[in-house]
Image (cartoon, rainbow, N blue to C red; front, side, top):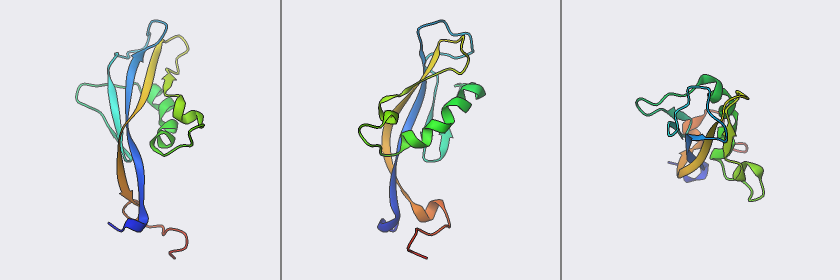
Length: 114
C-alpha cells in the first residue's frame, strides 16, 4: 500500500433504539447494521426499513470521516424514524478506524499526481 495515498474512515454501527413514543413501524430495538468502508453489513436475521435507511444513508459518509470538534455531525448521533408517528430512533456509533488507499478506491488520480 502506497503510504502517500492513505486515508482513514471510521467503521460505524447503526442500531435501533427506543425513542420517547411507541414504535409504529416494524423496528426492533437492538437490530443494527454496520458500515465498513463503502459496505453496509447486515447481520443475519436483522432487518431494516428501506424508508429509514433512505433517511440515514446521506449522513453516513460524513459520520465516517474526521470532523472538527465543533461540527454538529460529531455530536448529533441519534436519527429519528422518518415516520412522524413512530418513536423509533437510530443511533450511529463509531466503532473502529481503518485505512484505505486512494488508488484502491478510484482510478482518478490525486490532484497533482497527473
